[in-house]
Length: 429
Image 1 (cartoon, one colour):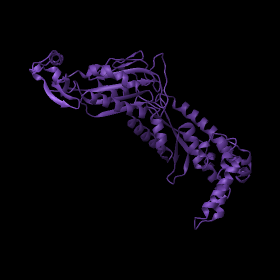
Image 2 (cartoon, one colour; image 1 turned 30 degrees about the vertical axis):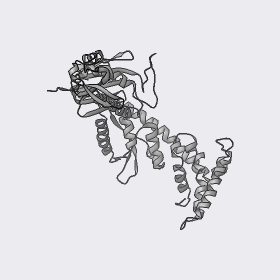
Image 3 (tube, rainbow, N blue to C red; image 1 turned 180 degrees about the vertical axis):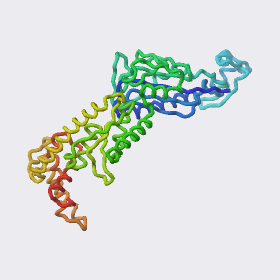
């Protein structure tokens, strides 16, 4: 009767960028699955794990030996294997013997090249442990990344330097070498909890053991932990978390044990456009915004640290100072931009040339106005003057302080519309 065990493979690294772990672990899952299938090794469900310092997979119910199967083996041509009298030649005898068979097991079969001697044999059931030992290193080397690093004189590249390898089949360590490292049944916890390697007795205790040493290795559990704690903190200020899946995913991918903290900023900054506030909190500090039940932003934010043992007051104070500095800049940019307005910036576009020979930004605006005039001929029930006004002001925000100072470049095109409304332009513009 076939026996089964679980398989764990963990690749421990230096801090991976937020966009690296998820696609890497998906490729790892695919490559190991293909490897097992090609080697006739049955397996059940697969679970993936990742943090900034590791990618890992657990294959459930992996067969301890290969499946045996009956295969056909082609030998020499039939006329070479047997003489005119039907007696086996040395070629036939040698072919049969090399596969543990006798010449009586040979039979003729027609192929595209003619008639050949064939035999059937049952493949050997190699131990899964042995097969994994020979194949895992090459699988790890083949994982692609947007950018890779080489950290020794070998030709192994990875997203970040690999610092440990943990591989266990059931209770047995899978020992293989990669770039000077030897895989073992040891992993590492959160760097703020423990520095020494942690020995695992079996695959089943992997997730639970890491949890004890400060690592929520399942990204979905980290996500739920962030949402649960953040929502609880928002209730303290009678607010609601502004949903942002992109930011949430990024934070999940850069922490091993999330610890949300509630912070605040001065109410005077609420006069900033909401999109500017959210950008300052999200893009610059990776913080969540908080809103009331009407959708208006409140002077609070949620930051998520990677250390539940941190000094919460110190972290909160640091973030509040950093955010206040950003918001002061934004408020200054807003005031200065509104003093100037958008119309004078259209004239200033004449001095902006990005690529020599392709004209100025002003000329680009004039081309846009011309194109708008042409298209407006074929559009009914629309005020052409408003269309032309929108085209005239379309690129003016590229010269605003908010965009030009490179702190809020992502708002180009958006901030222009906000300024136009604040400066009294018709809503359609």
